[in-house]
Length: 391
Image (cartoon, rainbow, N blue to C red; front, side):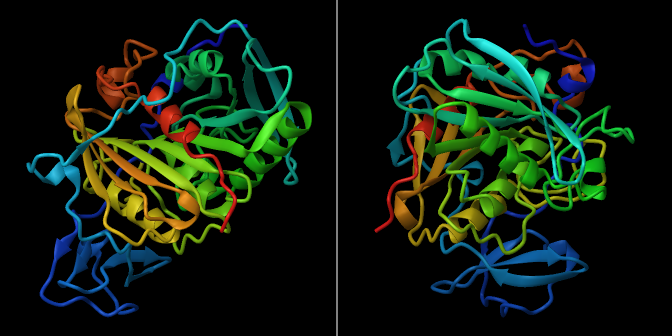
């Protein structure tokens, strides 16, 4: 059965997706951890020379200065014109997508809260008869659907070429019965999923357990990828489901989990466009439908670098085939995990490298940036970071 696209799904993550925060800056003095900070400083990271950086983070109704990643004083790629020191290939180790000829199915799970949750599944024809395969949980954006993201991302094509299983769960709709325009509960965002306190982390846990029981899944290679609101949930999974999730790949997302402390290290790839108006890369209220204010892309990356024990400043690299693309990579982290932040100059909120799913999609999320395939770049990173035995 071929996935169908719908107008609501094509709107992708137009929900809330705005961010707040500033490019990390050096200060004469560093505010004391735990002291109040003002709303105008939300998301800002500051540090005096030689001091541990701190970030202004809101928890509940209170905003305070909290410890940030040790590398937060490094200037983000979107704010520098300095030449890149190294190069990288965003598609390293992956085959380009091919025509999917495997098996598409749909299923439902009844969660402990009594909800019937839906998902789509693609199992490649090339699935090995012996051994175990990676599993990717692909999370649509706010107002999107599993079918929309399956069609828009091209993950089925990559799964066929690179031999992994991919599942597309559906969020919670805005109607009382759960149908309608769908969102995820990523923390205090987004939409009905958040206001109803839907346990989406529990849903994903149950989905993984269901699939592991049915298919030969390698537990050291269970990954999550998400767009926008789906990226926000992916960050939450990294913080709260790290016993299952090994690494995440995000485009145009953010982390809204305070005090993120995964029980096991989780590798992270975050891709963000400088022309994203739905969730501005450096912060501020975006052009989406929600009034929620989110933290900046860089603050999300810094939080996971800190949670993963990354102690050294990141390396800076460029893609020699595309001058729009630059990256920071933290590699001095716990258990050989990595954190990478890719900035794409001129890219909008739309899923990069794939055509819009409706004529009106560009009105809401911009024209898709054509020169970077977000799906393939995400799979390249995820596949290179299975969970390795600890020391």
